Image 1 (cartoon, rainbow, N blue to C red):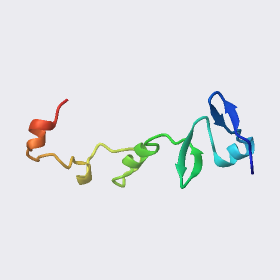
Image 2 (image 1 turned 90 degrees about the horizontal axis):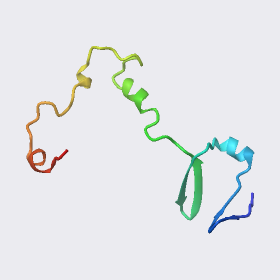
Image 3 (image 1 turned 90 degrees about the vertical axis):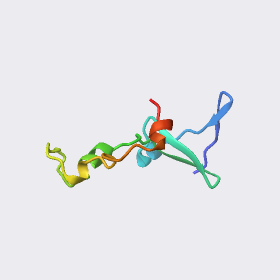
Image 4 (image 1 turned 180 degrees about the horizontal axis):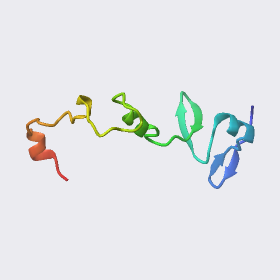
Length: 92
């Protein structure tokens, strides 16, 4: 499909037909990038979308997190001795 670029102030834009918007699942915001001299327009994604659900299921528990902790739930750095970075570089 060929479409004309339209003037929008000092920029140019395109009008995306409604069926293409629906087919691609585009919403109010899109991601825009250039790859190999091609303009890629993709549905806007929320950063970290679905992370909470993934974390809840990470130890094999159901989505209702239980109060009991497993070995995997412990902090990995707990019990390690402070190092030079902790003393000199780390600032709040």
